[in-house]
Image 1 (cartoon, helix red, strand yellow):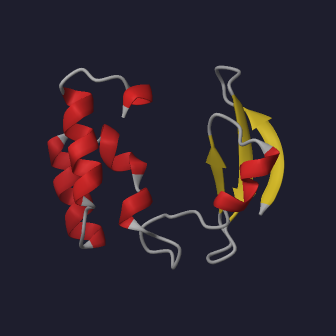
Image 2 (cartoon, one colour):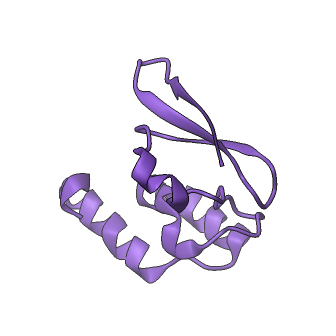
Amino acid sequence: MKIRDDVTEDDIPTTVFICRYCKQEFSICPAVEDDRLHLFDGCSTPGCESYDPKNDVDVLFMDDRDLADHADKVGVVDIKMLGKRRKLQSGVKFEDL
């Protein structure tokens, strides 16, 4: 559920939510448009009931060591996310994934 709009230290608009599963606050950057708010009812943090490996975009930006630690922690990493990670590493722009 959306709590408020905010900005990062670099003045990038963000939307702050509270997870309906674990009740923790989480932010999405850039800010979420009102017609997409329904997509963010869970924080998708490992350990939270809302976690889904298919939506774990943090995988895209992890180095190999962090990715290995993450996989050990959560138990599974989505193969499509790994493919997108490889494309990013080869120079494909995030917008083109």
